[in-house]
Structures are given as structure tokens and as C-alpha cells.
Length: 163
Image (cartoon, rainbow, N blue to C red):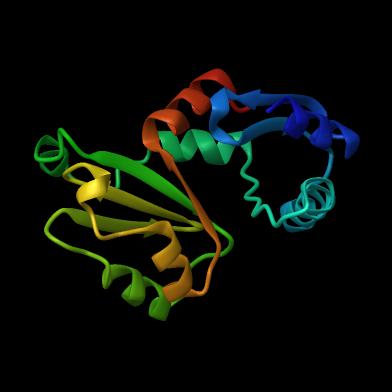
């Protein structure tokens, strides 16, 4: 995580911090072109680490909105006490065909919801019991994605409130 922070600082990004050992990096930038910023970061990380690192930039306001968003009914959570509630950050918004393909992963234990560039995944049992994987989703939908537990997103939003 220390090396990751140094790579972001080398890009002249300010106030760089890493958040737990999750791959989340918090920083400030004057750039408002998030797509260009993602490309700059990915290029730097590929050069420095020697492998592809998919990057997903979200503003503090976007993270705060995600932390508050409730894509599933409360009753669904009560049946998922052993499970997981995650948000997947995507490289783009899914089109209708992408949403249909995503819903093809739905099972008795896995449910999905999309909003903007995010996918919400509710796993009602342990994730190891699920047939859903990030890799299979990326291949089927021809997208790049990374998932974080909703608890991590809520903690991020609480610590780094929108300015």
C-alpha cells in the first residue's frame, strides 16, 4: 500500500492516502475528467508494477451516494445474514444487453441490481457457496470491474465526506 501511495503522489495527485489494505486510494485532483485520470493512473501503475491494474475513480459525493443507496428490500437482507452485500465498480454503465447478461447470474442465493456504473450484489449465503465470480461477469459482459464489500464503502463515505 505504501508503494501504491507513492505512485499516486508521483502523478502530482494531492492528499494521497490508502484506505485499509483494500486497494482503495483516496486523493484530490483538480482534474474533472475522471476517464482521463483513470487512464493516467492505469498507465503509471502498469509501468511501475509491470502488469495491468484496472482503475475506477469515483468522487467523494459518488461514494457517499452509494453508501446511502438501498437497492434491495430489507426483507432480502434478513435472509442473507451469513452472506455478503457488495458493490461492483464498473468501467462503464451497462446497456440493456449487459443488464440482461448480468441478471443471467441471478440464482436463489445471488441477486443483482444496477445503478449507473455500479452493480450491487447480494449473496444470501457465504460467497464461497455462490457460483458468481467477478471474472465470469467481466468475461460475459465484456467489462472491467472490481467489487468491494458495502461495509468498506460505508466506512469510506464516513471518513471522507464530500466537500
